[in-house]
Amino acid sequence: MAPRVRFAPSPTGFLHIGGVRTALFNWLFARHEGGEFLLRVENTDRSREVEESVEQIQESLRWLGLDWDGEVAFQLDRLERHQEVARRLLEAGHAYEDEGAIRFRMPDEGKTGWEDVVRGHVEFPNEKLEDVVLLRSDGRPTYNFASPVDDMDDGITHVVRGEDHIANTPKQIRVLEALGAPLPAYAHLPNVLGADGRKLSKRHGAVSVEEFRARGYLPEAIVNYLALLGWSLDAETTVIPPEELVRHFTLDRVGASGATFDYQKLEWLNGVYLRDLPPEEYAHRLVGYLREQGFDGDEATIRAAAPLCQEKIATLGEFLAFAGFFFERVEPDPALVDGSADLLAEAEQTLAAVEPFTAPEIEQALRGLAERLELKPRRAFGPIRAAVTGSNVSPGLFESLELLGREESLARLSAASRSA
RNA sequence: GGCGCAUUCGUCUAGGGGCCUAGGACGCCGCCCUCUCACGGCGGUAACACGGGUUCGAAUCCCGUAUGCGCCUCCA
Image (cartoon, rainbow, N blue to C red; front, side, top):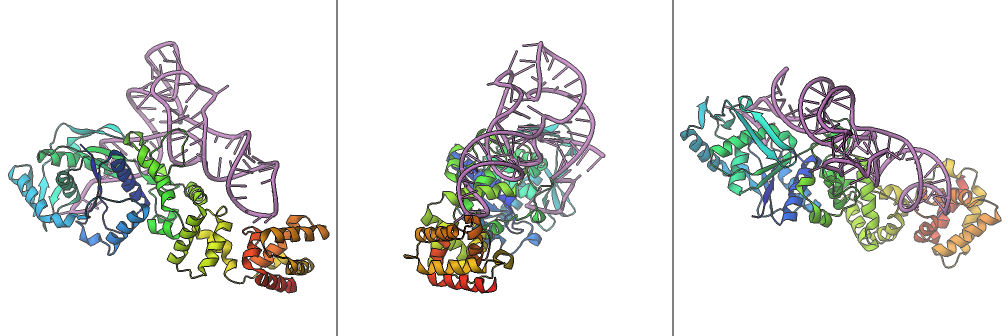
C-alpha cells in the first residue's frame, strides 16, 4: 500500500522554518515512496487564527517546491463528522460528559506504547494519561481528537511530526483504538533549535520562509539545508539537490536528537547553489528577486552585472550592496582615495585612450599605468576601484569599468580625482 | 514537581562491539592563488557528558547520575 502522509499546520501565522522541516520530511517521504502528501489546516482554535496565514503557508510551500496532493483540507469543515464520532464514543462508554464538554476515558492501568520510526519503543504509563477533552462545551473538537480522527478518515499511514507531539501520541492511540481504527506508524522528528539550545525563534534570526526569501535565499538551498537537520545521506555528502533528496530519503536515517539551526552553513550552501546556476538562469533569478523586492533598476544592466557577481555573493540579497554602483553614482569613502589625485587623473587619461573599451584592453592599459608609476597592482587599483565603485570590495575592476562604460567611468574618476 | 525524549568536534553529522590513535561538512586559523572581495587548492584546530557494569575488546550493549529540551490547556 502506498503511504499517505500529511502536513497539518495551524494557521496561527507565517510558516516557521521548523514547520517547513516537518513538511519537507513528510513530502520527501511521500515522494520517495510514491505515496501521497496531504495538506490539512488545523483551524479548530479560531481565536488564534491569523488572517492571510493560510494563503501564506501555501505560498511558502509552493515556493519551496513542496507540492501537495488534492485540495487543502480544513479541520473546521469536518465539524459535524467530529461531533458524530464523539457521540459514538459517548454512546459506547469510551467518553463521558463533563461540564458541557465531552471527555475521553483513558485507561488507568497498564501502558500505552508504540514503535516510533525514529526513536524505537516509546511508552507511557496509562495512569499519567489525562482524560482528554474531545469536544469543547461549544461543540468544537480539540486537537487531540480532531487530529487522529482526520488521520483515520484520510487514510494516513504515517504520522511524521515534531517531537513536541510525543506526549500526545499515547492519547491519540487510545482514541484510535476505541474507534477500532488501524494505527498509523509514528515518526517524531527532533526539534530545530536556536544557537542557545532553545526553540528557534525570531531573536535567533530569520525564521519564516518569507524572510529567507526576502533575503535572497534559493528554495533548493533551503530545502537541502533543512533536509540535513535531522537526516543524512551518508558520512560524506552535504550538497544534495531536491531531486536527489527525493531519490534517497528514508525515515530510518532520521536522527533523534535536537538540531541547532546554523545560519552560516545555510549561507554557504546558498552560495554553492548560486554558483552552480547556469549564467542565464542566475541572471533570471536575480532579476526576479530584485523585482520582487521592488528594485526597478535597468534590467539589461542587472543581467550584465549578474555574471560579475555570481561567484562573489552568497545570497541574492547582497547584490545591491555589492553592485549597486552600476545603477547610481556613489560617494567613495574619502579614506580610500585620499592622496591619490594624481593616480586617478592619470587613470582617467589612460582610459580615455583605451580602444575598444573592453575588459582585456582596460586591464592591459591600467597594468601599464601601474608599471609606469612603479606601483604594485593592488596599490594602483585600490583607489581606482574606490573612485568607480565607491568601495574597496567590488566585482572585478576591469569588467566593472567596461560595463559602466567609458563616459561614466571617466566622470567618476574625474570627480574622485578632484576631491582626493 | 511528574512523565517523556535526547546527549560524538563551537554547529550539522558518519558511526550500530574490533575497520576509530573516531570520518565528512560549516565555522575558525595558516599558506597558496590573486586587482579588492569571493571562488578554488593545501594544511591545521576541535568531540565520543560523567560513573559503574557486560565483554578478550565499547563511541557502539545494560544500569545509574548529570544536563538540555518537550509535554502536563475546553492550545495546536
